[in-house]
Length: 124
Length: 108
Image (tube, rainbow over all chains, first blue to last red):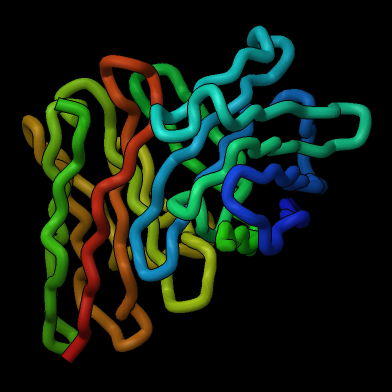
């Protein structure tokens, strides 16, 4: 059974840092593209960024609101995905979800397996 | 433009058919994906690609696309289908992903 489990959320002051983790199991993590998606309280879904598999270059892409402040990394030996969040702002308050990103030729991309999310609250 | 537009709310009578739409320029190049989210739960993939359902998703859920508009159709809506529905696709400019604002479906 595929599982992704996020952890590391909590309360942090504006300007602070936090690192989220996502433990994956039930699939070959090293071959997977992984994305982070967030959802502010009462709001819609927002894509945060992705990391490709190392065989596909291991590169990262970020949404404009987090570029330069957030860093996605992976440890394939531990089947774990990370989201390092620096210079946090109140508007970063959200539930953060870890997902597997499936990219199929012919213009198909989808987020298949989702964790239950971890809440990050940025407040003084 | 780099946006996906959804109607904020749609309602359907129990057992009837409802279509939820998603508009955006990127949908001319990329298929939409649809997710269902119930209160307090993580999103659930319901439709991807031309019209593909993951295992466990009932066949009353179907997807279609025309031009810059993608649609999710629920045939014979049930009370358990009441949820927020989000469309998602790739941004044709930056290879990022983006979501529509979501549609709250009420089953009357």
